[in-house]
Image (cartoon, rainbow, N blue to C red; front, side, top):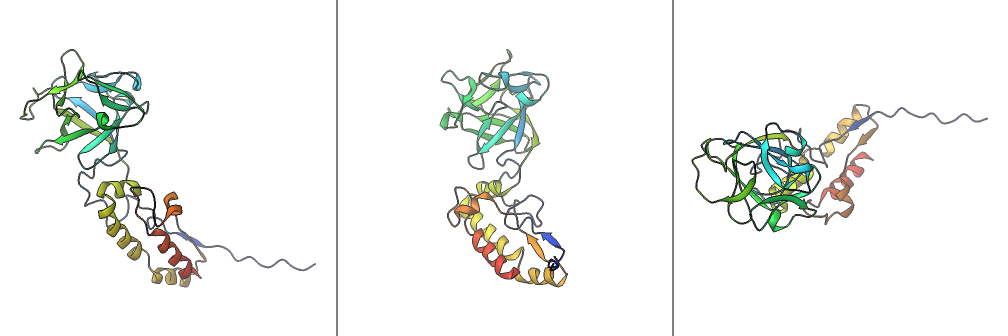
Length: 252
């Protein structure tokens, strides 16, 4: 019986951070994004500085928003969908979006965000985590003495603790990935940044070094959107498939 061919051991390296952007990459690709701490998926909690109470979505969603919670947990946490550097949709615990009603009240009932579900975050010049929230009607949200939350405050502010439209904001968590890069910059600005990263982060000499070091394989993580390259869905940037093709050539 013929002996089975000897299988050489596989010694591989993972080339993470090349074709799928991650926050740990240095130098950071996120530094130039305006309001880079408010990217898609960021989770925020809003505390009224006047009432010292947190904003909450009653029942975690499907009902009105209030400003009467002494502590913050899941129902008091809002996930950002970023429209641009200052405009956002707020997603609640139950996955509904916060929207403005005709009477100025706020409810979390929308399955898909549209104009009534789009708000602007205005930051204090002296403390970026002191914010006001402008509703689609052009007025600011305010925490009322009865614990209700309404979008009917139209006065200027000195950012004092007596202003019902000022909220102290806690950033609970955030995401830093390809979507955040592309949507944070916008596709037009993200395109040259990512294409420069793809062409310089790993180069042919790196593959030569990998081979000379006795490694026999590489693992290259890619995003699902590469299947639609060179025209991936918005906001992703096209061109990573060409870089992957180069990697196959360098690995031969």
